[in-house]
Amino acid sequence: MTAAKDTESNLPDELQLPWKHLQEVSVRLRQVIRGKDDVIEAVLTALLAEGSVLLEDVPGVGKTTLAKSVSRLIDLEYQRIQCTPDLLPADILGGPIYLQSKGEFEFRPGPVFCNLLVADEVNRASPRTQSALLEAMAESQVTIDGARYDLKHPFMVIATQNPAGFEGTFPLPESQLDRFLLRLSMDYPDAESEIELLLEQSESEPVVGLKPVMHADELILLQNWVRRIRTDRKVASYVVALATATRQDTRLRVGCSPRGSKMLLRAAQARAVLRGRDYVLPDDVQHFATLVLSHRVSTRHGTATSMEARQIIASIVDQTPIPV
Image 1 (cartoon, rainbow, N blue to C red):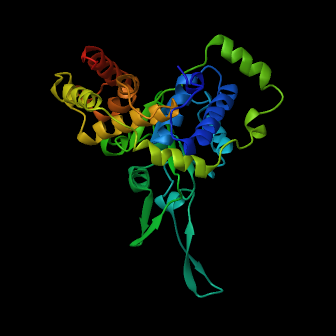
Image 2 (spheres, rainbow, N blue to C red):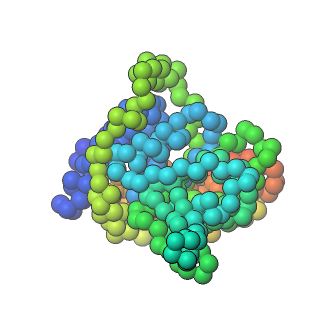
Image 3 (tube, helix red, strand yellow):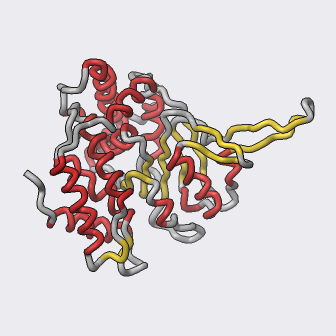
């Protein structure tokens, strides 16, 4: 299902126009990224929830194109970094530069000072460089030489990694995975979508022609409203029941933390806004439970893949009663 199916909203009057513009963003994205409506909805939900996204997939399926398209359609400042083993924290955060003309140091901001940062192949960067993104994703700020610098608002990180090749990579530690709101996989497009892509994009890249249909200020209005979405106690109890089930499941060594519960509820609230509602449904929680919780648990077998963790969480979701 996609947000574009919802044509009416019961959000406050001041949010009606921003919400309609967000629907237009969704429509335009689906014209560029074919056959990935669920991924588009998830990325827009993360954007509303002020969360970051880890896209785990093979190269060439449109991960960077999706990020560029979002930044153009919402008029966000976009930066991309290609992660390599020799990438340093200063290459992301920036640092002091000595100006000989002034005889003093001046702070030169790095690419993290933007609205939408894409970190390609993040698991190829060293652990030291990976950790440079921790504070930025968690607190929208960075600390350099004892000085704190606030990042731009809104701010989002879309990091990618290739799960197929492990040589020369540094697996993301659990503490850093926990900073990502969602862990997604774009996968290959279906045959019909790939045919349309080939025919429509043979002469030019569609991203180049995209124009803003939404302003960053409108996005901030919607983001601020996400935290105020009404949540029934039964829905909150459902979130806790899912988290508790992960802590008691014998297939898991470590279950979901309270922060994971908070992030699941935040994603559900953001999906409600994306759908034009001022209240959360159990369906919102169920829809994002696997994407939010699977990278926040540890399996009994250290060699287990992310797919196995997703399958375990999916089975927990199926077995946990939905409140009525």
